[in-house]
Length: 394
Image 1 (cartoon, one colour):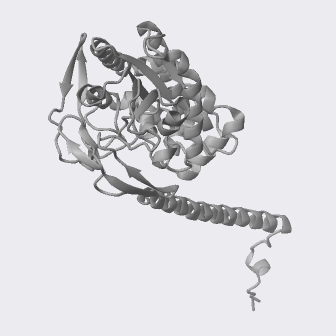
Image 2 (cartoon, helix red, strand yellow):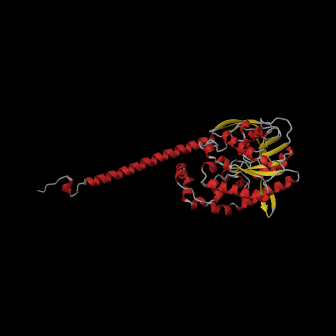
Image 3 (cartoon, one colour):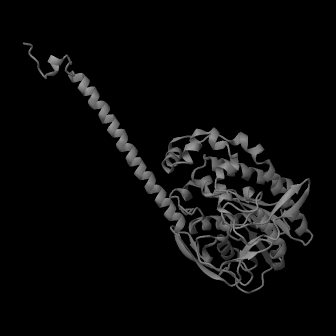
């Protein structure tokens, strides 16, 4: 009679050696560690996305400060007041009777020299009090004989600034018009009938030869279809296929964690050689717009100057793609100003001063506009560089 047994040895199976068991344990440990790590990363990514969404939703501007304008797209409402709350700040804006931001530093007395500064939300002073804008601080430093008027409107690009200058600002009889150019997106938005930063339509110019043709007039009141919004700044700068051709940029667009890691660990690609061709059309259009304005107001004894306003990435992450683009735009504006004999004041060098930006307090951390400290730096810089640029001088 054959003896049978249930033992592995009797059935022909070999016992697992201690080294094999250790290798199997290591493999299981690695798999579990990877699984746990992926789960943690997933939770962190979800948390960051929720936080980012909450910060976006915290941006609440009280209705009644802006109104539809058939020529400009939108404009400030004269004598309006409104609050603006955001994760980074809570403040109130007051609009003067002239339809521009109220400045408590300006009295009703006559001034021998009036200079108007046009721009977007950086110049308007989004996020700070009326008295904290760089234009208000500039007025306190300039004395009674020189008055600066804040003619900026949040969301405007250069085309709208030129239109409002011709229609409204010239009525104030300024001796000089300053165009405060936001290096982030002003040259991008002039190509389109809607800006990147607002869900409103706007006018825009098309350049044919040397002729400028105004388009999208009267500006429709209807908001844009959300699907048509342009939200990818990198795609606007480098073209829609850039992310497909650049693996790191593609990954960063899909993950907040990847974006943070890339910003801190990976050197950004050098795009300097690609920018000239990619931005030829907006540069030509911008040049035509500024030249047209300068020639028109010169007939009334008014001159035009340029102020270059860098965005946060240019100061806090100078090697980034966005910073490389802003540096390129600033260089092109300097060449334009030299060619057209226009005064130009760049602000980048002052804001890059290490002692000023050490604590990162020149820009709001999430909103991205100037803090009161940032406005103070801009005001000091302008006050020190403008005396040599009095009207009638170069």
